[in-house]
Image 1 (cartoon, rainbow, N blue to C red):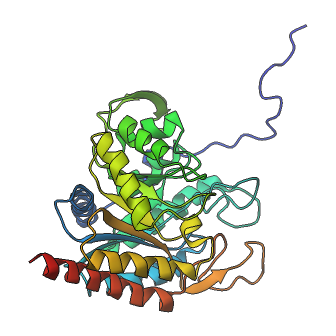
Image 2: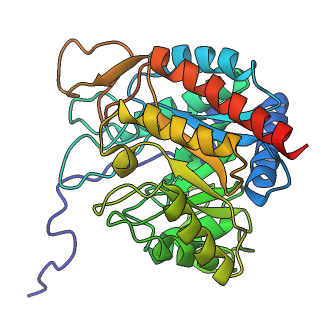
Image 3: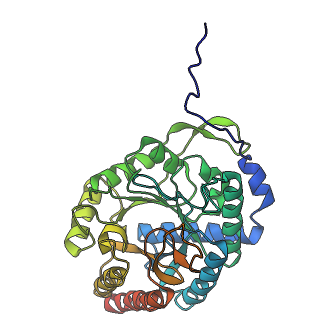
Length: 353
């Protein structure tokens, strides 16, 4: 008797479209490709110290409502246009959410927020939104959580993140080594920064790894290594790590490993003690240090939405423009922070003139 030994705990299998199919349905036009190429080059230059502007990655913790996301993007575009000489602004367009145990896993996995997991639909909705945001003229920032899903939309991303839960993952480091945009590695959830530095070192080397090709077939790809990689300080279980002392420690670690001494600070997560309102205090502290000449902090991240706070993803009706994952700053709270960060860059320039 031949006993079944595979798929014993698989209930259902659904086919997915090939990445090339979804791309053909929502293509990137020539103007969009030029914007993305320019944004990637600018971000790489900022993180390498060749451009003295500040990179600001700002937007919802996660996207659950494309209409609200486009509304936010229009506001952000107008705000960014006021500070082109000081800030390079990219919008957080995050579709995947790592869960500590269980919970809503993001727009791609469950686009209808009802547990139906219509992933084929989620991939199409996600790509279309990225095309729409690109058409508005905003660079896109996102986290790469699932190592295959990026094939559906990586061509639209100007800055990528590897999160605190996956920073130690070999496959994510391999993925980052082949991504076409600058990538930031967050420190581990306990606050360990060396892990992120090790990830940057790894991603700068070539790798071979199995993945999904654009036509949907399994493939093994060789990467060239990604020199446009850096660390992101997001705090940890030991507390925040955005202070001057923490930044100096991180810079010393980067220097000891022969890496550029520039980094991003995430104003949210453990740096705000998971209190959305505290993000403003973190951003203002950073702005003050930048105005006094701080150059190691080349980028900041802020979680922001149309409406502040958060709501349960199962609530009905949902409040338009309010996060269903981590609490965010409201747009009204966010707008002055962009101006203050831009003022800080101007003050730093005047001080060094």
